[in-house]
Length: 111
Length: 115
Image (cartoon, each protein chain N blue to C red):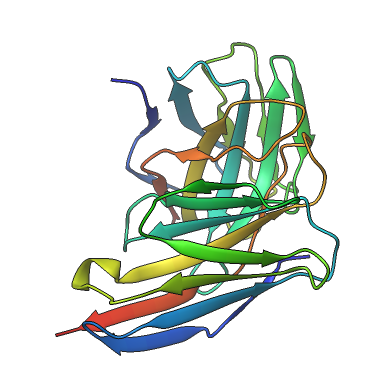
């Protein structure tokens, strides 16, 4: 079952902040975040692991609430380059290598 | 430069024909994946492979087949049994480690159109 993302779409002006949420009905080992520009491959942003470890870009921040099976991606002082579709991916079992992606959140940053 | 290549970028086929999509990586990754992307539905996992000569069905494997004879290659065949094959197909790879949590590297994708 795919994780649920919210909102489905958001429009921001440059400099504004946004939060994208990802929620699963299952216990999670890790949450991945990717951004995809139209017609291109998804690009890795961050991984949050059970236990608090994080891997990713310094300018991107995210949280992972293991008990609630939820993760949030925080985009601050948005730039035009932040536009794209953001996907979360969830991994239920460590080492099983299977990641299930959400349906995406389309973010548009306007001048 | 290390990376993942998919070919071709655009592919057109007639209904009822099987078609094979190529995916090659030189990142020395053990795990490889195939996803299908349709508008508004995100990425759905078709098949994945953790090591050579082994692969598992994902969430939407019906009508697809794969092979993993070499570490670098993970071709996907879209068979005539797939009822609605027109979509954007993405291949990805990642390192394999027991504790998991590794990012996936994606290829540029193949847009398949069945006429």
